[in-house]
Length: 245
Image 1 (cartoon, rainbow, N blue to C red):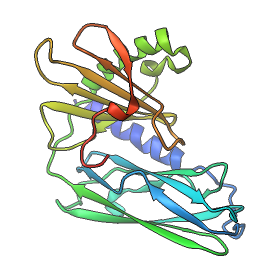
Image 2 (cartoon, rainbow, N blue to C red):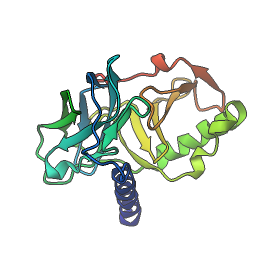
Image 3 (tube, one colour):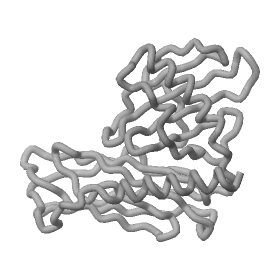
């Protein structure tokens, strides 16, 4: 068990390093002009020591906007908050913040501040992370469920298949929530949400939602009615979420 836990901690560290290494060539003096706003898809998440979480942010440019805005992130060091981009512009307008809290975190809510600036405008969004008393479960079960989803993708969306053969970091989306288990799976290309109703047949349904990282919205959702292999597509808006995310 300790070996598996070490492997997944190592994997998330690699993902964080890779995400923090983007935009290396951006010169912070190369700022654009015009008006803009920042939009957070959600401003609150739950997490726990040894767990993870992430926020999705979008640039909303006005008609007079051009060029780049520079991004700056402020957070407690023990949240291990990481911003995947140093700038945004009209062509690349989505940034993600990943957290990986360590044992120094108290059971309380921490605030993260993301500031964006250009030559004319500055904008700040505040994001809250509530640290819960929770032990992360081993990831084998959601990764097993991913295999079923991947087979369905192979048959129905072959351009998205092969996900189960990729490396993933898996964590509990909503610490302290039981009966319906919720997991988030992350790698450098995709975010997958999986929720599973922990009941006996025929009430043990599973739902999936997929988002390509760098996009603001998820592109696909599907549902398996029970433990059979029958999976069907569903509206993304019907994928169940809690606490606004």
